[in-house]
Image 1 (cartoon, rainbow, N blue to C red):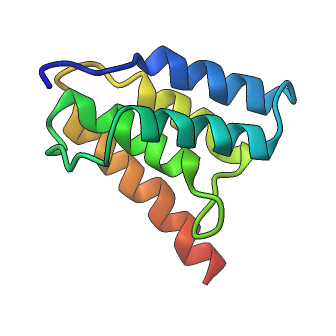
Image 2 (image 1 turned 90 degrees about the horizontal axis):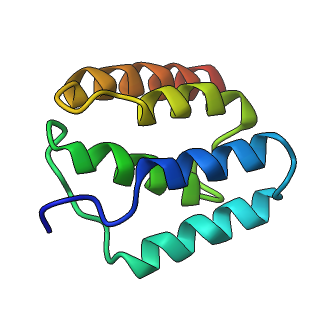
Length: 107
């Protein structure tokens, strides 16, 4: 697979629809799960691979029970999806910081 199988914009659109109330939590999770199932099993792309951003965000969006996203995560996720190609490693550092702080706060 040489390129992303769907665009980051697809995920941006879903996040914006969810944040604005156009779709429900269940719809977001369901649509994310459909994308996941359509495009195959999670790929462990190296963090410097441009595909890792898209699949990392999608994986987080489809989680319902373990660590579901909240609407307060939307600005961060949109910024993560806007990471410039070639800047993936930096975006992942921000990811680790954002979700690491959130996990620490909930402990």
